[in-house]
Image 1 (cartoon, rainbow, N blue to C red):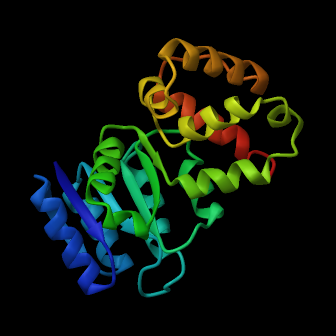
Image 2: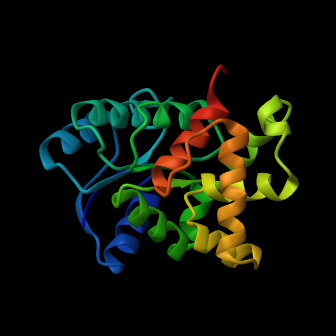
Length: 216
């Protein structure tokens, strides 16, 4: 699996290269600036891009904007964005085109090698990998909205885990309940939010996140 990595801090970039290579990834390019990232994504057509939000020359959202432009040129290009802090605007922009293969992680997550690598693989496969803190803030900011207010505490918990990209089996294992129980909660969540029931984990997560994010 070929990866384009964009991170301006040399030590972190070098560490991520070594980590990904240790897990069998091929590093197609490891760059430190927005212009370099743009060229690498256009020329190399990687299987997945791992991108720091803030890159030179602007040190604002250069990395994210480069990734979004690349996704417009190549719809569905898998992109995993790394950020120092939870910034919901970036998560919304990343999810705005409604296609899968996206992730948003805090940089602290890279220190858990297995969690980080799992996120890269999930995004590369067309799924989602959203940082739990991002989801918690999305949920907390929408907690007063009527549809979310209809959810039971357990349904809200299941929704949060769904939005992280977890399957029903994974949610059931974490909550120590049966998959059948999770399927029932999922159906109730979709019904209360007015969303079409789907067995497609990626589509359902994107639908829920899009709902949580609308009219903001």
